[in-house]
Length: 342
Length: 222
Image 1 (cartoon, helix red, strand yellow):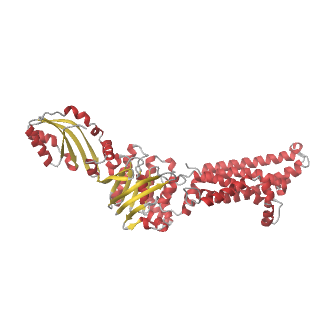
Image 2 (tube, rainbow over the protein chains, first blue to last red; image 1 turned 135 degrees about the vertical axis):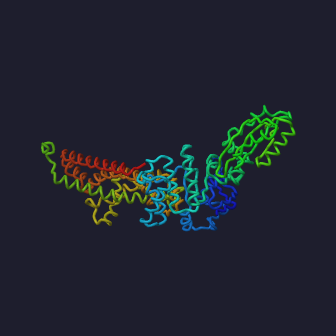
Image 3 (tube, helix red, strand yellow; image 1 turned 180 degrees about the horizontal axis):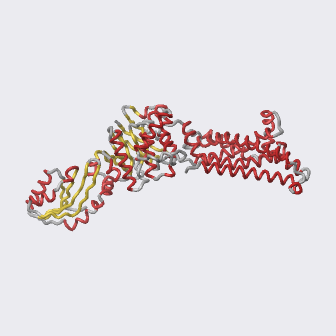
């Protein structure tokens, strides 16, 4: 649905050029919730602004429903933008307008007659759960409510795509979850493609189907959320994954358990999707003559199912340990022997 | 008792003068409001990073604004005599004061408008662009409404300056309370007339200030 090919953006100032987005190619399918994560300065905000051409790309193409955005004239671009919703970190509502009038604004821009506007606005107010606040001004709303207005506004012209620029970064954790749930329900109800930019791993974990990790203008890793989380390749991705499982970083603490004794082995188990729900450990200890010592572990739910890691120490005859590991592998759970700590 | 304190004040003359002052003030405030917003928008929009970014045009407008602000009002009236004569057909009376009043205060107000527009959240403008808004829509539905409290308090300050300009214009024959205070009061050594005119002007200023503050507060939902 959205094909981004070799997209680049260079900012030139008097004494320096900044390559904000560098040769980014991404495919986004209809109905996807596509997350782009990166630390500040990674170019992700510029990237999302290139999609609706709030910034003009230096190079590359953005093909939305077969239409190359970079080919559009100014007038065509304005029409196309009406079909691309966008929400912002700081909501960007007009304080001079009420909730109702803010949501009606994109309809006014699109030239929808006044009578038809009312029905749509009331429907959207209902959808985002702001019934009764129609005549409030943004200054009378909480952050979460403001973002709900922002979301309602972005949906007014029935967009095909919703761009979210750090949409939850100014909200507290609880409100963040509410807004994310709202986004998921909109995604499901309206089959709306959502592209979201964030620096919070939590957001990706909670709602994204697929993810791209950005660093210095490049996409360093992309794919299904679970794959990327399970096998982070780049340093940046590893750091983000670590945010989710704080324990995972402290492999050093396992040092004491790692010995040259072949009657003891420290093993890291990866659980993905349904495997995460299995009672594997009790299964193993019942079937084999072995002791299992659980060292540390964590589980993270994502949109595509849960994934988790568990560090255990197997104690027993070397052959039995070998059998156990073979058995575990047949169940689809990933096994990795830890014999050193780097 | 009032006749004892103000023996030379003739109330019907006072009312006529007050009417003339209010007339000059209203029309010139209206003219200044329109011309000032136009100039202010032009200054803002042609500035760097804005919708009509245009360095040469911006410099030209800024120079015109700065130069006309630098001319003392009393000299501006004299300089504009030919223009006024051409436009109004006379250089005496309240109407003749209007061109000078508007030309004198519009550049000042334009700067206040520009400051007000700069305060408008860039994010809101970006949001409007992302919705596919035309420049005209952004001006009339975002920039002006969002800066309206600043525009109103700016025009209040300007209106008060204009009231004192009308008094100055009075001295060279524009009519109004300034004219009365100078011709009937100062020239004839009737201090009471000067005092009465001053009181009237102060009351008018207070009313304008009050109205401006009230409107500005009413429309500010920030």
